Image (cartoon, rainbow, N blue to C red):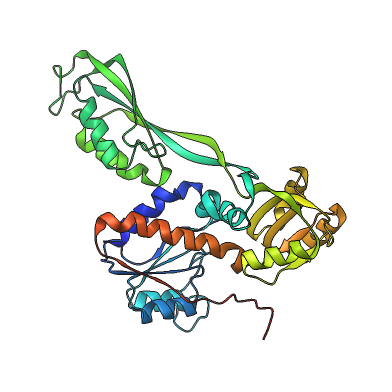
Amino acid sequence: MLVRDFVDIIESLAPLDLAEPWDNSGLQVGDPEARVKRVALALDASLDTIKKAVAAKAQLLITHHPLIFKPIKRLLSSDPLTKPAFLALANDLAVLSAHTNWDMVDVAKRLAQVMELIEIRPLATGVRSFLKLVVFVPQGYEAKIRAAAAAAGAGTIGKYEACFFKAPGQGGFKVPLDGKPFIGAPGQDETAEEFRLEMVLPAQIRDQVAKAVKAAHPYQEPAFEFYGLTTTVDGFGAMGRWQPARSGQELHDFLNDKIKTQGRWAGKTQPGKVVKVATLPGSGGDFIQMAKKAGADLLVTGEINHHQALLAQDLEMPVFLAGHFESEYPSLLHLAHLIKQASLPYGQVEFVMIDERPPIRHKL
């Protein structure tokens, strides 16, 4: 397998256009055409996990948190901020990250399932941005153009590929004086029976789709354009319920056992009976009010800051702080399983789970 094959697998599981604008998901460093015989997986692309991936003789490290999160001005082996990237490059280790795009698809739902919640649904809705290709094709050439655009990545809707819409019409133009026109005589007005062909695509593959359409189109100057579109999708967080309710020390012990943590509490620290639960793994402080308005009796997240804890206190909203690492790790295990399954048709590839410890610990 090649690095780009794993990029495609991640794209199929969690499309990159689901990622937040401030995020940096995707291939972080490495050659897309490099061969991969061993894949390492970790939650973080830290210096420690990269060292372990190199020691495991992996050619690819797949992580949840990006290796490069904020813009960097220089790549120095002595700079702690860029040393992990420098080490990966020096050892031909590609790093591929699925961050907020994977958050939108799985992370909160996976934690809810670990907590044995039922009737799980999204806590928030999100917006997915994509493009629609519109190209005008002479009659008899629509199948060729459709196939070329689909091969370049256009036309995928969910699990369906090569999706399209076409409608007949008539195109008109004045034939140029130079060149070899597809139809008509130079300098004359001409009409042609054409089809309007439409296909959707992720914004990041616009250039390759445009190139494919131009190469396959019989006209000297093919008429095509891209329109920006958005659609509502399941967003961050999940909501579910317990039946029967949980409360008191049993609730505390249950959460610690299922999430494998030693959690802390914020907001209303004696929540009473809990039936409806919101989950937002990682940093979920911005969702305290949303969870409250959604009717949750409890928000389970990784961490919140001081002022968010004060807000939870004012709202009398119980918040269980499971730890950023601990709350997201179950979803990494699920991602690893899905990638392994998707890679089976490609042949033999080894997978290694990097041994990680939470960077914040409750004991020495």
